[in-house]
Image (cartoon, rainbow, N blue to C red; front, side, top):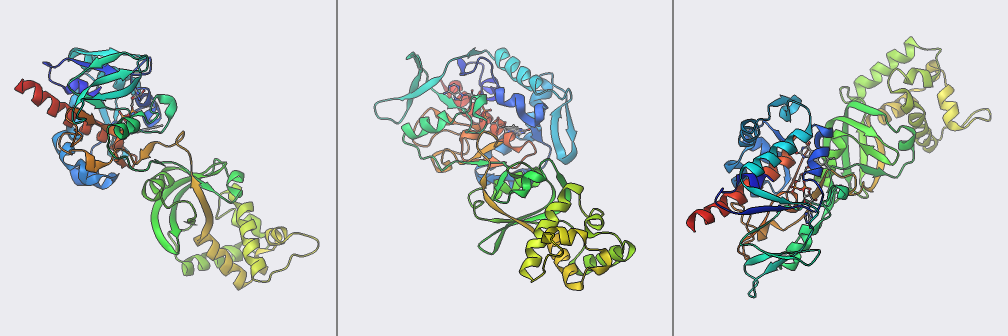
Length: 419
Ligand SMILES: Cc1cc2nc3c(=O)[nH]c(=O)nc-3n(C[C@H](O)[C@H](O)[C@H](O)COP(=O)(O)OP(=O)(O)OC[C@H]3O[C@@H](n4cnc5c(N)ncnc54)[C@H](O)[C@@H]3O)c2cc1C
């Protein structure tokens, strides 16, 4: 829609959409509010593009976040900027973004064809130029230019089912392997389910693979039935999705204190609550639903260190009921260690049906970054998430879609002017 809205008004243009309505994915963006771009500078934008940052230089330079804001505001959609420079419609309604785009397309003379699925792209005999498309019902339509904006594989219920990758491959272009990104991690340990819904704020995480730290961050995360999610985990998935399976996630629950300071704090807490059971003292340090899980992990560590259960109780129960004043220095050190290194095993990523974006796609080597045209096929363009470009959350993924759309529109329009 952005491409059609920006194309020369001299060109005939038609948007072919397989759904009954356009922009179903936009509708669910930003929790229904659509974080449509980010008001950062160019370097920050490029830094937030995880894969394909260099590729984005030219198209972002030509149609930046400021141009996106201008576009929407000049088409009657007031915007606002929130925490983290995230830009939203003032109305907080993603539907208003879709309506604005649809109106801009109509005003620019673009027609819409709904419930029409493109099955194939038709090339000339030499396979070096586009001739048109074929719909699923067999209808063939001739075009000088075809812009593939079919999205990735995430949330397939919105219509993005990866058709563009097939179009690219059939046209002889390479497509890199696709992974879900901005997605949860699946965790081996079943204790995540016990803490499902618990959000941890101001904690640090590290992702460790083969003894190397491959990601670290500070912020907020969430436990789910099958693992972990939340802002930090989504960002981690964008950076290390390919390596995630088999890695270890280590949470520092007290990042503001080093081990020595934390030990001093525990000594003070245990002294102040000397007759309380450990499980109750730990409630002052951890969220309530985490305490039994923490004690369970502590029991595994202490069993390894030779601690024995008492009086017919399990080791976890023994630890939970230990009085604060009888916790030994060694036991306290285990507690400190676990508070700083609460670890679990990542078995893989959540699926495409819950991933915000797809990592991977049409190989950038095949595409001219200034125009989005396939280098070897005249008139065939790829824009948006179908390309092997992905970014962190914050409005950057839609900015990729807008900038690449504008690049294709400018190139096609320049061709129309020449004619
Ligand atoms: C839950 C969620 C929240 C998100 N929130 C944000 C956010 O707040 N900010 C942000 O920047 N990004 C966000 N994103 C990512 C962003 O929505 C996508 O990166 C962006 O929509 C990609 O745009 P696109 O035009 O390339 O593809 P899409 O938006 O996926 O659009 C592709 C369109 O092509 C149609 N189509 C596909 N195949 C065919 C075919 N064969 N024939 C005809 N039509 C076809 C589909 O029906 C669909 O309408 C979010 C994504 C999700 C899933």
